[in-house]
Amino acid sequence: MLDNNKQEPFYQVPKALIEMVKQGELTHTEVLIYMLILDRLKHTKYRDEQGKYIIITRQEIQQTLKISRLITISKALKNSEELKLFKIVRSKGKATKYYDYK
Figure 1 (tube, rainbow, N blue to C red):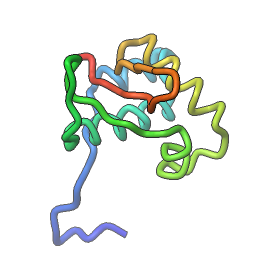
Figure 2 (cartoon, rainbow, N blue to C red):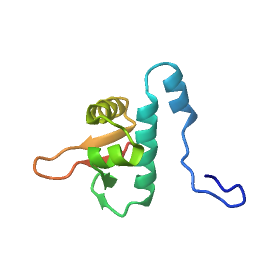
Figure 3 (cartoon, helix red, strand yellow):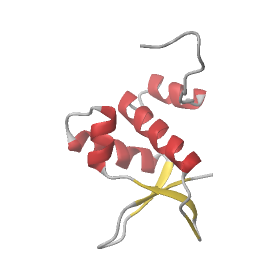
Figure 4 (cartoon, rainbow, N blue to C red):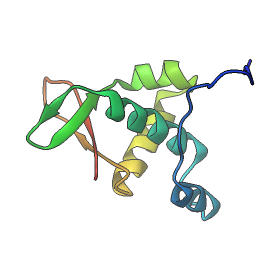
């Protein structure tokens, strides 16, 4: 439950994403995943030649956001990457990295 007497942490959503939901280009699940990844990117210490990145598994996204099916997450990640909300770098035998497109 929210405590109105103290400052709670929050996620920010760009208005453009809400417009994309209205237009049918983006789902609510994709917005939630975007917010999760963007928040983690703000706090990450990982950096390489491509910029700041995070490592997060589909299972971790599933547990954090209480999404029942992994295929839903896979489709959401694919569409989000196609819309250039973030960049996904997959390497054989290594963890998948998520970068912001900024």
